[in-house]
Image: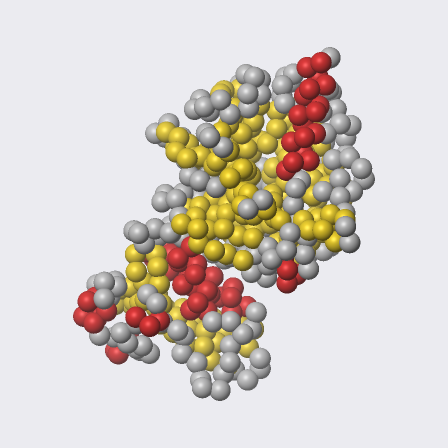
Length: 438
């Protein structure tokens, strides 16, 4: 009985601690970014300001968005405008030797033209200066003012893929929870923003905690934990505003939802039978199936990319560690062995890297290379939690604490470049990086 009571207290503390988070109006909820640590190995790229007519004033400067995206990747840095030796407007105007002398191997140029209908035509050209040829040429038509940023993200993705061979993930969205005090009350808001924190939109505002948002694979829905009815329940929200429903309101704790890769199932933690175990819900029928049966706390499950197994956190060995459950056989295998505390697993889209919260003179984000069986600590921030991979597996978004405030941070997987994201007022927690938009 004592052990069961302690388990309940631990689960409740964990849920409430993770719920720590948010509010803000749409403007206040936008995330601001600062680079906490950069890379000396970043490759210089020339991103020329897009040419515009003298009487055209753009609401956003795509070249600045692209430069910021590439810099945040940790792999590239845009040459500062003051260091640009020239501003060619056509391929035949490029002096290849001039650019190579500056140590620049690649150059982007382009143009934005207003069409008189409140929209724009955007053109980009990306040039390989070593090969002296254009490698990307793209045009977007009927782009409205706000969509200029979306086009800039798409341009960034094209450049990133050309230079790395991997798909970019700038044209994606993130979800997170914010908290601020309003009239001496805590107000929580579930927000969705672009990958760079711009354009935050409130999905739900509540005086009760919101936590653990999880994107559906199609990017059209979010599952999350709400306490609006005085207890933990799992809600399903359509982002177009068409529908919202409570899908898990079972006896005991309902928490930590995670979608299967095909979107047909949702795994979550529930304690209706006394212990906190993993359950699977079939989304078409809402039928549930108990997956684990153990006295320990089993939670924070995530699906392997092939949908055949789950990685989850359990304290069945006395301290939290990561285990893998094979759904076809029911076999459970311990995955984490470095240190006494590992929790909050997140798996990269290709299945190679497993991120986790690792206790080592504080709580930091660590990544295990599943092929090499090597663990490396990726962060030096404080009280890190909730890691989530970008859909290309190149960056990790996570929650942390800085100066007594909850903030988000992004770290590149391969070179530890860190950027900190915060709201102007209040705190931010529970991040989730969404899938590709198209």
